[in-house]
Length: 148
Image (cartoon, rainbow, N blue to C red):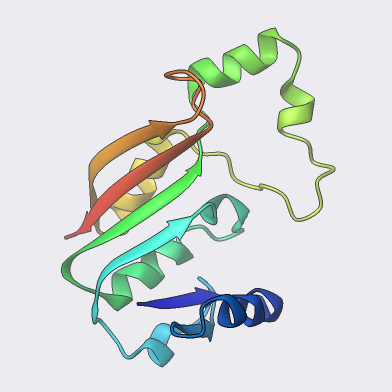
């Protein structure tokens, strides 16, 4: 098991808290050669893809480091039609999608849009899990995908 993050501060904290795990200063936009090529059975990315200007970089990175038939487990905030409609009806659209949040979310994913991106990048979605709140108003979603 290893960990990757593009933040020096985050890596320093992770190394202090988990000194037995190798951590690399590496992000989705970086060349994964430092990890030694395709040798991982799974890649887990939690609440990252919504912050990326170039979100295809994340599944491309994962694809390169995964063994054949490896898994990508990805979580991100859920933004399906009913949730977006509910936000509009209750007048919370601006607060939820605030452009004033420095470093905040810049991509908003539904199950369909994220599954399309992952499929285009060589993955098959094998499972979808909605988490938090009520069905179809989920806070987050988890997609489990297998490398083709």
